[in-house]
Length: 354
Image (cartoon, rainbow, N blue to C red; front, top):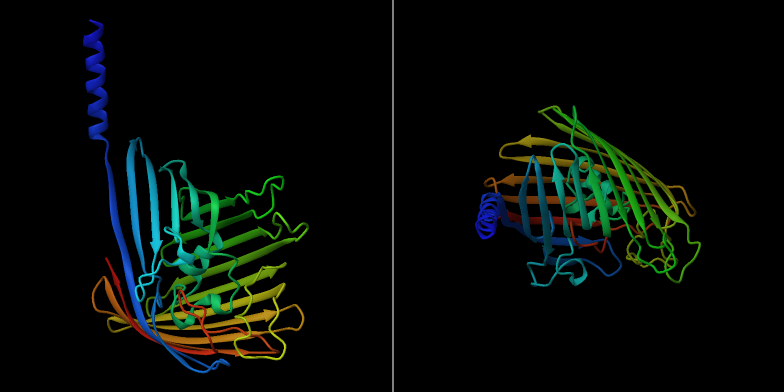
């Protein structure tokens, strides 16, 4: 009898396992373009570059249905350079993202791993009409408080009446110094109909195993976009305080006698738009950094681009960006992956999704 009951139990378990819905998908994109940069001390340069509009990548994504609206999820995202075959993000195998977690329709999503920060997702997904790519990418001038955090745990609430929130904490993993190297971020968002609005905050400790009392970097971010159909408008305003609250301009790309210094206090503003034209869209952006620290190294980026859809998965793009640096600032026109070498850049290329 016991053997019979055990056999029935084993069959039921196998049946439940077999009926559980699960799946793994592979997707990604390949982006290659011609980039012409000028204005730097080293002179003009032509490049065939991977990751101009978006970084080339391979994505593995999976889920397992646990029942009652709950599921186990994972994502592994590997960046690569299609022009050379090299791994991106400094040679990391899954340098773009890598996480595992649980998702619930009622309770939200909890994930652990290497993940995007709330502030970066706000800039790339809500504020920047160039979507963090091409010669108009926001991070050339607008403070980028860090795109990803290692050793992190993130929680995102379910959306209710268009409102949701998320919070992230990344452990510094420095023995004896709990806060050293740690990072945190949070965001409150509203997304309903034609309006997307976000309020975000980022904090990062400057302390390390060697550096003590290094202070912290703090970034407050407000952003929104609204689709008027004939034109979609974008806006962002950032308040950045503390060491490393804004990125250091490229290492003296213009050959100044006194190299650019790291801003410890700045206010940034972005205004942009996209306009549907034919099978594509015109992209416009103006980004200004108001440096509040000495020697007041302000900068302004103006950019224009056009993305033409050959299909739902393939587009051609062209873009141009120009930066006006003041008081010895050294900001350069970037793309989605490259930092850039001068204050002017032209892009022409193709992106394919698979």
